Image 1 (cartoon, rainbow, N blue to C red):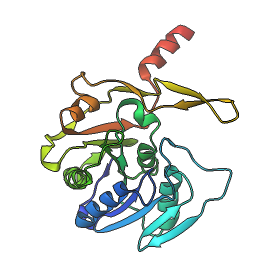
Image 2 (cartoon, one colour):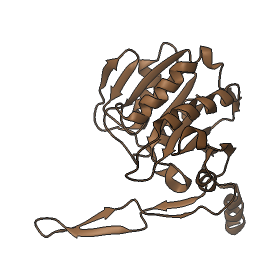
Image 3 (cartoon, rainbow, N blue to C red):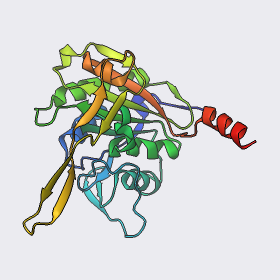
Length: 260
């Protein structure tokens, strides 16, 4: 059975992120959805949880702090926030949609395996709710065009209304960080290749002990047509469907043949 994004005017929307409940991106997402959705709730990490991936807090208690009408901060990861949002904060009437973001910085290619933004949408997907992750592809140190994110979030969600999500599938959206009118449109893409941590910085602390810092350098290929990297590089909003099923059927066949 497929889950459909409902009529937005009647939809109950749960918003989360990994940049924290006070980040400008989640406020842009909240503003955009309040213009088109029936009811908007925010349940997000209290502090930044970038690169938290799909981690879940199991060995210490979590706390929920009310920050306003339908706004809550969770002392945990993006996964914790969505889980508590659905199973506790909104337990009397579950959300129709889970949205994550808008992340400051792209989640392209292999970024999705580290991303807390994408992980929040993963948790919504595992709970059986249509889920979408949004990111603004902002270069380090650059000023972010939050008005672009706000405008194109609304456009994307209007087009997704009524779309049937296959089980175990979420949508990863990346928005180019340009003025709203400079965006060339919306394109459906596949994952590109982009690996963080290609350079590791080494140094010594004041006591002379060595330390290592994983930098933001990425080895990426923006030349492959049809990928999220290539589309965003041309100024398009990329929509990439991601599956929670990580098993590889081709390799299963190879292993069965090898093992007899």
